[in-house]
Image (tube, rainbow, N blue to C red; front, side):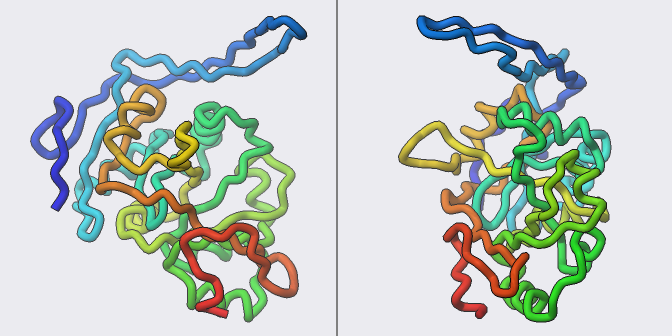
Length: 258
């Protein structure tokens, strides 16, 4: 059972947010004793009502009406923070370029340098966004997913256009968590995912959704609270070659599925 303080919202765990976000880029020239740092891009988000919605969704039995509310936010170009089987992440509709740019601004990285992955509800989603998978790769993914893995695959021609990048690969995630899978299933296509990093050097990833809300409530449109997240990211496996290559050891144990 999750006990959460209601931060001024209605009894069903929602916070009202009537403001619409707009993003403007400004160039800041910062001076120091040795050099001038020019054209440093910052993201400034303005809203009539700055607070994002905070929605409490049960992690095992997500409420359908609240999942529908999240999907409507995504369809309107919203940026959300949501739980996975590893850590909390930023998400948006893969077909909304402006929402993708907003996530890039929040994370302070250029779109072409962002390592986005797609959250899918099952393997049937991926054929539109990847090239044909070799049989061993498909069998490996079928055994390991849903689970705490990100599989790097050769991207279809559609992906560079969606992400405004020249990269020819895409990360695929099917988390073992009901909330993101239900969101994607109702949306009927994948969402972008990008991890939330903490400034704390000891705790690399922020785990407390209340803290996440306080930190990002003026930057996103919705935060989903499904209890504390983990602080170990997904295991990243490169499947673009003849054999799978472990790029990052995370929560998933690849050896169990080889």
